[in-house]
View 1 (tube, rainbow, N blue to C red):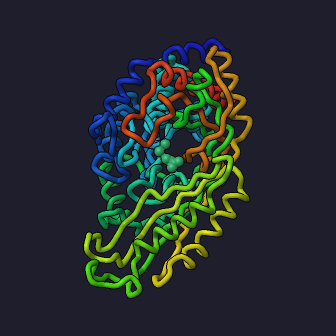
View 2 (tube, rainbow, N blue to C red; view 1 turned 30 degrees about the vertical axis):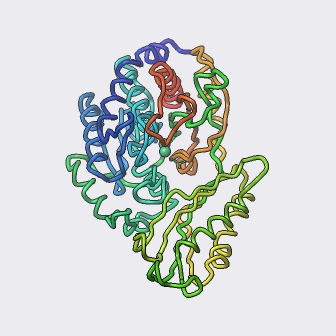
View 3 (tube, protein in one colour; view 1 turned 90 degrees about the horizontal axis):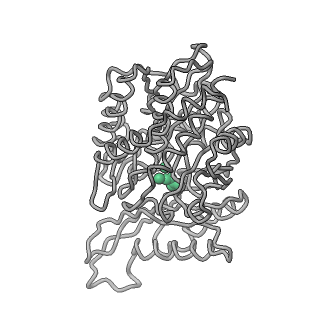
Length: 417
Ligand code: GLV
Ligand code: MN
Ligand code: MN
């Protein structure tokens, strides 16, 4: 490894990186060490302003696009060369942990600071990106910011989406954008040289195999649907079963039928119903309306396609006396990352003497959309027992720093090409 790159890598400060995680974890802190930092919320805005303050302290340039993706840039010698990008997201699940997403943003910031402290001049700019609404826990679907940036989806597809309290995304986004008025507005879909996302693994493999860094080969396919069941409200004490149009009972039949179809001997299919809204949501009224989510995943495209194609016919068949509609809200991958990025990351890890292995991602990430624009890869670091989307999510400061070191070296590799 070149001496100047080694110098930058050594300036990655494990303590600064950890302290920043802890500072971010105060924003939206919930009991049990968790974080609730929903996209386009007051907490999201506070996280954005904190990131902005760190960027300003280094005189890095900051810009934002119309869906609120925030970019922090360290210039290159060739000011207009497509930047090398790195980042992840700052929003969290409603009962999320302190590392999912924010690690990739803070690792990218740490890389920028280390490179800056080493006084390195890079040919290409290096740019951090904090993607908007990666989680989709408040406004579904997930990976919204990167899907719009990459041109895969239009911003207008999402503006009318409501959260569980009826708040409209367009209004929450407008408030979020208004909270950083000093930040320059920029375009979507600008060219990039490469994109590397650091993230906690959210699974147990690295810990089980005693490896510090995962080199991610790709992401499994993912489909989301909203299923709505329309019935009729009626008195729970008086209405005979055959006179009911019970939307909740119908929803349960639909869910059981999808579950039966999704069962596979190898336990590779992932099927989740994680969100359900019931109207009128009263113990003694038959439900008149149910909306529930379907999340279906598998590494193989044909399997995801087959399962996804079955959702609507199942919903119609099992609705019984009710009616059902199915709306697809997300159709992703599977995606295989560019091997050139994996090779650079692997070489960096090996040169730094950091144990590593290749693995696929079960979770979805913004990198899936960046892979449409430029060579893309991901760096995983272990998280305790693989626990994620849970307040107890945990990671070790030294592992976070090791991932940031690999990221720094890999970014410099691409930035000097
Ligand atoms: C992202 O959090 C996902 O749902 O995989
Ligand atoms: Mn994440
Ligand atoms: Mn997540």
